[in-house]
Amino acid sequence: MSAPITAFSFDNTYANSLDGFYLPASAAGFPDPTLIKFNTELAQELGLDPSTLAGEHGAAIFSGNTALEGATPLAQAYAGHQFGGFSPQLGDGRAILLGEIVDIHGKRRDVQLKGAGPTPFSRRGDGRATLSSVLREYLLGEAMHGLGIPTTRALAAVTTGEPVARDGYVPGAVLTRVAASHIRVGTFQFFAARGDEEKVRTLADYTIARHYPACAEAEHPYLALLLAVAKAQAELIARWMHVGFIHGVMNTDNATVSGETIDYGPCAFMDTYDLATVFSSIDTGGRYAYGNQPDIGKWNIARFAETLLPLIDEDTEAAIARGHEALDAFTEHYERAWLDGMRAKLGLAQPTDDDLAVATGLLSIAAAQTADYTSVFRALAHAARGDQAPATALLGDAQGFQPWVDAWLARLDADPRTRAAIADDMDQVNPIYIPRNHKTEQALRAAVQDDDFEPFDALLAAVSKPFTERPELASLAAPAPMEFYPYRTFCGT
Ligand code: AMP
Ligand code: MG
Image (tube, protein in one colour):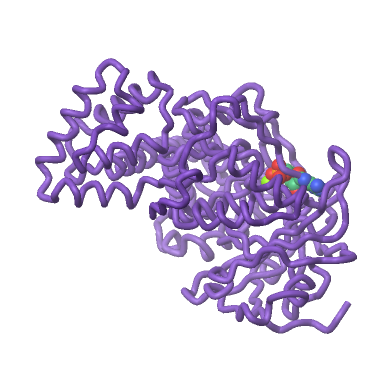
């Protein structure tokens, strides 16, 4: 191992104040690390100097081969409900938290290596990640960031030079993940399941200080924390629904208390609008189907509430009653956030009592026509500009389409903005480029099998600016051909 590098100004509150919540871990060390992707924009946001992190130097750091001065490499303990069944002992089996950096906006961010080797929580796993899964997480996370949706992000991707055993041997890689924190509902469950109320309290106090400092001033800080997390998760899931994102594995260990999207395993974007859409090969019951996500989000908040009950009130009945209030609050936040977002997608600036019916009316038509969800909203913007042909091509055969458009256009005419201005505003919230499943698969295949990163880079560039139409990228905007389906995704280990 070479001399430590001082490029990162670590300030590790998790390691320093949460003794007992993690175990030390160290990277495995790899024979031939190569830096294949580096996120310059994110590096700058973190106050890092990108020029010092390029090439071999970056490869040594982001593979974990070189220790960073000030890092306190550790694996976090957590539990989790997976597909509804409780596992009391999960933890970071293939992720190593290096530490925290305060970014240029004053925001504390975790820096974590994913796939850098086994940890004390690895159980039978190898602690490795495949290049395909690393690139997928890189791409999908940046796409979500481009859409303005809270998410963990990728700072770097490194190939290790070491094949990993999956279905045969495939190239191994390490992702450097940046997150507001990696505290999950499952982190609370780990200590609650052991009846360790003091540890839950310590974690709750830490979470309040780090993510929701205003809760400390509330009359009931732990109830305030519960409500804050319920709101963050409700708003997050509403955002997923607006863009047709299906997380695929909404286990409580994959639900952050910060409200960031985390763990891009079997996730994918829906093409055809259908609430029953499931892509994950292991989600045979459809528990995490597109349309179930709000209910599952609420279910996860119920599990979070359970961990906090003893802190909320000594009287269990009273605590449970407060917990139910939080679940009701989740529903209210979700419904409000969803409708607000749909108004923006439809260019409706002035809320009216009809808006829910307008939004659901459109979605029924889209469902009946098995229309491409993303395309519908860009087509409506064209209709607002006076060209109804794209919308008619997508939805025109459905009963009720023309009356719906006429009523919607009449609504727009009551708006002081011009129709063109409304259409431009709609285009600011309705993406034209999402990581289309067939394009994602094609890009990953080219990178992994042929060492050809051109399709990946093109797709990454497109989805990083998802609202800006570029005619040369037209092929990335189109849905997958029907032959592409059925599509199956895998928990990318
Ligand atoms: P995930 O499905 O990625 O959220 O992971 C669920 C659990 O399995 C977590 O505790 C992971 O750390 C662990 N895990 C996943 N893949 C591996 C691996 N290759 N080696 C060790 N642990 C793993
Ligand atoms: Mg996970």
